[in-house]
Amino acid sequence: MCGRFTLRTAPREVAELFAIDELPLFAPRYNIAPSQQVLAVGLRDDGRREFRQFAWGFIPSWSKDPQSGHRPINIRSETVLEKPMFRSAFRKRRCLIPADGFFEWQAVGRAKQPYYFQRPDGGPFAFAGVWETWRGGAEPLESCALFTTSANATVAPLHDRMPVILAPADFASWLDPTNEDPASLVPLLRPLPPDQLVARPVSTTVNSPRHDSPECIIPLESPGKLFD
Image (cartoon, rainbow, N blue to C red; front, top):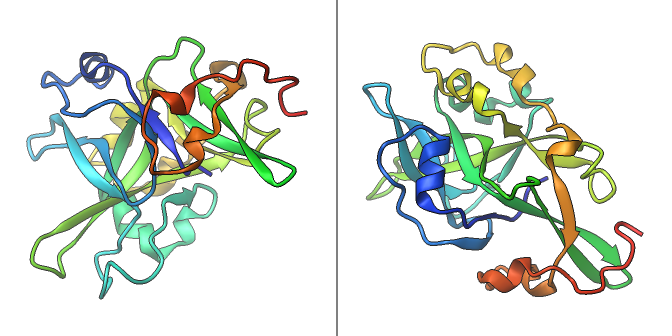
């Protein structure tokens, strides 16, 4: 799964990754959690890419009350075609979620040790996502969810799932508004090659979603054996 991630890369580097002329407006984030606002990339009416903000936790357009009921943060790529909740969004409202790392946890006795996963160069990447608009209130509410897939060999020692990280070469295909055949996009929802991620144990500061500071990704000084 993916329950926490980071986006601390300079806005200019994020804009370059997604080939967008305008810089995104965001402060560095070290512990992005469900229900919070996340930066996303979608398409304008003229087909150009733009930065947007969505609440992380999918609210179907037909929901009677966004404060009640299940608000999924993740979508299993293997079964998405079977889920009516995501059918329209998968066909028409796909998005990219900028990030530069994510967390998973290992149980150590009664404690949970967090591990931070990122690219070897620490650079930004994109999660595959979909978004929806709920119009039942005074103001529209836009929300999103991220796709997950089976874990690669880097993540598998901690969890059997991982977020789908799309290659830049697949960004255009994923966002293409003329493609309303979701089945043709399922092959993109695959694990990232294991050599494109590295993991390290970090401070337990990140265990609380109230904490959002550089301390969340401080490496442990004496981590011992990874995944022991």
